[in-house]
Each structure stands twice: as C-alpha cells, then as structure tokens.
Amino acid sequence: MTATTAPTARLRAEDLTLSYDQRTVATSLGVVIPDHSFTVIIGPNACGKSTLLKALARMLRPTAGQVYLDGAAISSYRSREVARRLGLLPQSSTAPGGITVGDLVARGRYPHQRLLKQWTAQDEDAVIAAMRQTGVLELAHRPVDDLSGGQRQRVWLSMVLAQETSVLLLDEPTTYLDIAHQVEVLDLCADLHERKGHTIVAVLHDLNQACRYASHLVVMKAGGTIAAEGDPAAIMTAELVEDVFGLPCRIIDDPETGTPLMVPTAPKRRAMARTS
Image 1 (cartoon, rainbow, N blue to C red):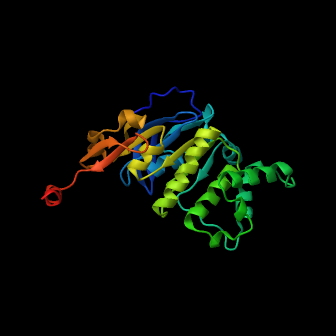
Image 2 (image 1 turned 45 degrees about the horizontal axis):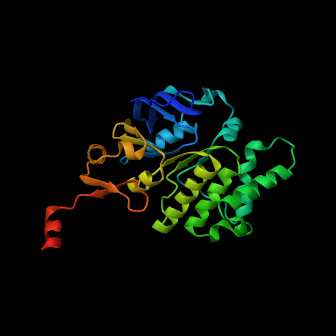
Image 3 (image 1 turned 120 degrees about the horizontal axis):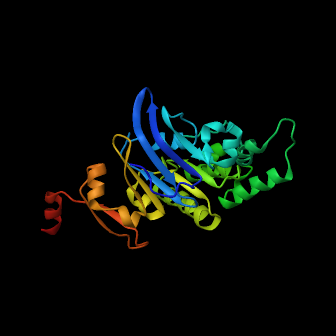
C-alpha cells in the first residue's frame, strides 16, 4: 500500500524492499511522514516496524527502493549531514560507564563539530536547552548509571534534542519502562510535537497509547505491508484490530481524551462468571 499524503513531506519512502538477517521483511513498501506530525507505527511482532524505522534513519540500506529526506535520496547525504537533519533514539542505548548526564547529552552536538573546532557557546546553549526541555537539567552532574529508567530515557532524548533537528525517530521509546514512566516519556514527546513543532516518528507496541498520542497512525501487518494509515479516530476499528492482530475487541472512546480505546473481548466463560 502506498501513502496518499502529499509527496512534498520532508521524509518519505518509496517501493522499499527491506531485508534483515538475510530475511526479506517487506516488499514494495511506501510511506509518507506528514510534516509536523506525531506519527506512530504499530503492528504485531516481526512485521517490520523497527526495520522500517531503521531504513528511514539510514541505519539499514534497502535492498530496493529509496528513502527521501528533504527532497533528496537519503543515501546521497554524508552521515554527519543526515544527523543534522534527523535525530534517532535507538531501541536499546547503552551509556559509557561513569559518564555524567551533561557529558552524554553533549555528544548530541557531534554533527555540528568540525576538526579542530572548539566547543562553542552555541553548543553549550543547545545542550542546556535540551536538558531543560526534558526536565533533566538538575541531573547534569549525576552519573547516568545512577538514574531510574524514566530519567535515563529522558537523558537519551535530551541527547537527540541537542542535535537540534526537527525530525525525531524513536524506536520503542517506552520499552522496559513501567506504566508511569511510559506516560511520562510519551507526554514529553507530545509536548515536543505540539509546542515545538517537531515531526516525531515512534514505534510503539501499545495500541491504546498509540491512539492517544498519535496525530498520524501507520498500522503494519504481518508480511511488512501497511494495513491502514491516517488519523487514529478515522481508521481504528474492531475489524482492523482483528485483521492485523487477530484479537477480537471493541473500540470505545477514551474517557479522558476521546481517542479510540481498544477493549479486548472477554471469553464468554469469564464474562458469564462476572455477571452471575
């Protein structure tokens, strides 16, 4: 399925064939990321969500097809230039032992450094602004190893923000976090999208979180195809969930946000026991 959004979007992919570990994950895959959107990619395990995100970030070279960034093939840019245009938060990030929060966030300035160029006031301002946006400025001198999972995820996001890119790609940013920290990180991403105008692309597993936070939803299914994409309120149906995930459910309105809320259908024996 090819996307129908205007082809002038900063980030898009056309006719991708993606392979991972010598296995073809997707063929003829096309997607357009709307500018200034909070785009969430969801789908069952092994459908190619993270593989697609890696291709969009130029971490994975397509077997066929092309990813375009700002009107040019992403493969035509030097690595440093790609890093000036988009930031990536990988699924698993490991900080060097003993490094402080401030030093780790400062590594986000790498794309702006030059050989023999000294650290500048602009670099310092960017690092402080990134830590302030994510609420970790007061942690600047603490070792990253001493932080909670939610705090560490905010620090990694700070490092990406220090790159000063307006396109952020986040690969399962809530993995291994408890529910409170999941909401904390996603609220922060929503704030960056709504108040700062960032274009955010995130891979998530939780369907209800995806519907609550996304302004644009991309639903992938087994075989690396796109089953549906668009405003969650417009595309999320019980039929879609059962087709993609094999899960019977009801779709109701989230009482807090009005966004689609997926409620799995209870087995008859359990439903009868509760009503008897």
